[in-house]
Image (cartoon, rainbow, N blue to C red; front, side, top):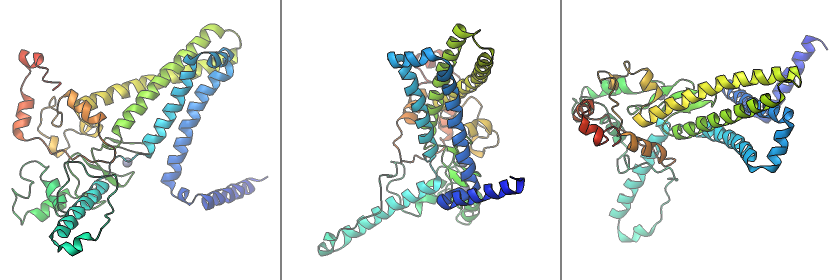
Length: 357
Ligand SMILES: [Zn+2]
Ligand SMILES: [Zn+2]
């Protein structure tokens, strides 16, 4: 078969594939799917090679629940990966939509209450699903999305404090020019997703989505499980090599090569888990840490002060116990709070656990 024939055959198969899966016509979706397949393949190769060469491991897995747990971790890690990749990072547009829905509901309810008793019996179903807005947004009218967001910016940006002639210019400068929404502080536009993301952390290529307020917790658990799986797999490789090092040289070469690459992955994952744990405890994002001097609301604040931190324990609680589908908007702390946080630590602060509470 010639090269031209091969190319035609490939194009034909590709077109048929697109007929069955029209969503794959988008190159971004295609590359995201290829990455997911590559990740699953990498996992299968590392674990598959181990079970292929280590016959003792297969026998042990059948007898001992301990090695059976290893397979459970393997499946759980892949499930966590797909759950994280499929979860929403918390788009600003969604938060705004939920805010409007909550507000419409409130308005219509108050209108119904004002109507005569005869018309009160008409039941009205509002399209509000389980994604109710968090405490911070409930009870605001639609025009207050702008007001609500503006009040979260540093003093001087608030509509109460600025001249009404300056407001349109201020709004224009803060509004995202790509998706045309007013993002609250800590949100940022992602050019890969083409949306503004609440508490934007980074765009993860492996997941094919952003990491933000909505899925940061899931992301942490994913990298934690991946680190655990990597460690356990490394231990099994070392155990195998210790016993079977001189049986067949080509198997040793494959196993040592995989062990070396696995070790590199382990170092990377461990550093990533530690880094994200630090971000969680200080209530920061990767973007804020990396671009601290360029972000207007962080400019001028001393490096060691984390403006959004509420103490390690509270930060951890908020991170772990956020209810799915709710959005939380955090205003920038007042100057007084920042001054309080900037104070140097004293012996009393250490005793009273100032960094934790
Ligand atoms: Zn945007
Ligand atoms: Zn993104």
